[in-house]
Image (cartoon, rainbow, N blue to C red):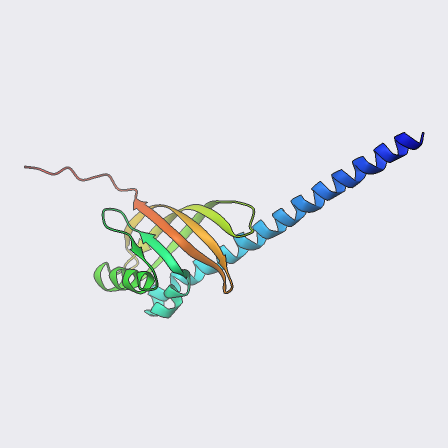
Length: 160
């Protein structure tokens, strides 16, 4: 009987410990998802207001932004450079992210998968596509660490 009680207590402790660990992971991931949603809502306000500081603050200082068909932009100058291209050259004035999933345990890094839409000053859709962002937990909160995206538009055929 004594061995049975020890077995039951040990089993309960193991199950409870596992449950608590899973609860912590679930809580961390839920907080990461919420923080990412908040950051994504602020992201396009930068274009609405023409405020690069709002945009730059979404990214980690050691980020890399990896646009299609061009070299990656990495480091502290990446976000300001990318904002200037989007705002001044492409005419982005608004947009939205549609998060499909956030993967990970919410401890140091998580990956966001989603869709994006970009709009001009007339609220006309100028681009849409998909993205993967690796988010990093920094002392300032969750920041975009690696940002990779591409268009959903068909590739244009080149004529000779």
